[in-house]
Amino acid sequence: MQQTTPCTPRWSALQTAAILLLCRLSAFFCCPVPYTAAYAKGMFAAVLVQAAMLLPLVKLRHLLRIPVPALWLFRLSALTLAAVRTADAFRLMKQLRCPAPHLLPLMFLAVLLYTVSRPQAATARTAVLLLVLASAGMLLLPVSGLRAAHAVSLYLPGNAKGAFLREFRQSAELALLPVLLTNQKPKEQYAPHALTAVCIGRGAVLPLLVLLGTMQNGRLTNWQGSPFFLLLARTPLSDAVRTDGFWLLLAVGCAVLCVTFLLQQAIPQTRTPALPRLSVLLICTGAAACFIRTGYRGEGLGIAAAVTGAGLPYLLLAVQGISNKRAAFRRTE
Amino acid sequence: MRKSILICLLGTMLLTGCTDIRTRKSPDVLAIDSGNPARTAMHATQDDTVITAVPSHPLLFRTALENAAGAEISAGHLSLLLLNGNPAELLPGLLQSQEIAPTCKVLYVRSDPCGLLESGGAPTAGQLDAAVSTGQLPVRTADLVYADLSGGSGVSALPAWQQDTLTLALFDAQGICSVLTETACRGLALLGGTYDTFSFNADSAPCTVRSASLRISANSVRGRLCFTVSGSIRTETSHLPAAELLLTEMVSEALTQTAQDAGADLLFLRETALRCGISDAKTCTQMQWRELLKAASFRVDLRVSV
Image (cartoon, rainbow over all chains, first blue to last red; front, side, top):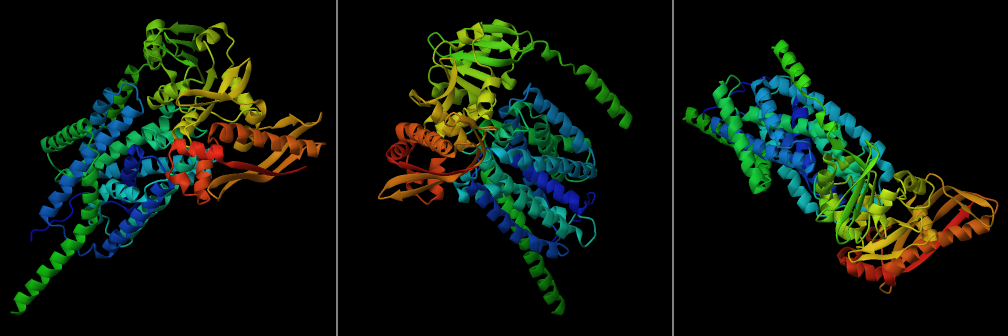
């Protein structure tokens, strides 16, 4: 079996965790499903299942060698996910009535063009910075929002099963985790730390935010648009949806970073010439435009990517184990 | 490389001027008359003028005002919306299209809101804020009004300007149902708990609520719902029995005039019933919930102390 070794710059635990958390955060900002207690419950259950699937990978990552066909599968999924996330970001900007919405895709493209040309280390460093900003903002949310919250809203009916599946759909970036894990700095403690941070961030912070949003948004369950920005609009700190510059910029920043990261994973090598890089970008833009036009939100693709991302490494390890045993058997013969 | 980025950044900054500020008007008060023909008026903060227009549909107020003003209209900082007609037809459209901010204050005027704005007789957003902070009215911003319309029993309440006083009007998809009395409004404000000070006259002596901890619970007796408001209120008064009587009357009136008479669920009664394990509240339609509320009984059990 032809095997490959990582050729991209190695990331620390914090950088890996920041990238994965921001990708999830980007999908969270764009998700139009209203918050309910069942949403938080389903989300938490999905994170528990994902953690149970992913944490054993930390122990097994030294044994994992990703073959070239599997690597291409990861790249293809990264490219498609980048297109889905671009479409989501565009929908969010349009829904938030950003000024001059037609110029935004052009700006988005320009930023992507610049960031894709930069080394991956720059993306990782930006991710850490954005994560710090997002954390600071989220710390302020409960402080400002609790006064207007109604705990009785937690009894609003909801669909936990739908939330469970949605969490898998929006965690499609985890499909790239095997590549990231084999791409970390060669220190033993880094990978467990990164995964623990991702699990805590997604399992504790986001469901709590959904619960706060449920108490704050209350009966506004048929609101068309991002419930997160509705929550912001209804917290005493912010005045109106459209003037909440910090969160809007953060949402756009997260989307750009998420798409950049996915495109960087989709590009074959670090030192790829400009033309293939540009063609990857153009394919992503074209696919995103198709998704916007057709209203596709990556439903089936996301679930398939997340499940494959968590399951494929085990499959690869099993195949590797079988082929190693066969080779050993042949040698003894 | 860094130098070139810096030059590009500075160049971009020089080219980015806020020219649209000069051509944009931000109204602080907007009036929409959904009569036939529809009319709209806005008070522009920049030059302190009132601009009026005749839109082909009330929801197309922005285009009409832009044509009349010769400027782009940005209603993001709107602090008060005056409207008449059926709020259930206008408010959801305005909110879903994000023409107004969710926390914008809304005021119902029985007739000619544009004329009221033009004559300067309309109450200000500050007056509404003061009514909320002194416990005369509960908080009823556009999002809360819309939330009760789409959830609960489909009956909502919004502040109304009637005979030069602020009150609350109940409405559903068909239009305005009733107008609440001052006592019921105060009861709703007390139950909502969003006031800063809550004072009233108890038997010719001033009484101020220092703190209130109220809770609503529900139970079902032979298929009939029963809601109980219980809790304790600490007051500053020299006439405790009179204060207790008045506070109980305020809460009772609020429940009677909203839930029992109109079937309005403004106090999360449906969610309270769900919390208390009443399964009917989960499955019934808005209309069925309204009928259940009308048939329900309400009990007030307050402990008022000094």
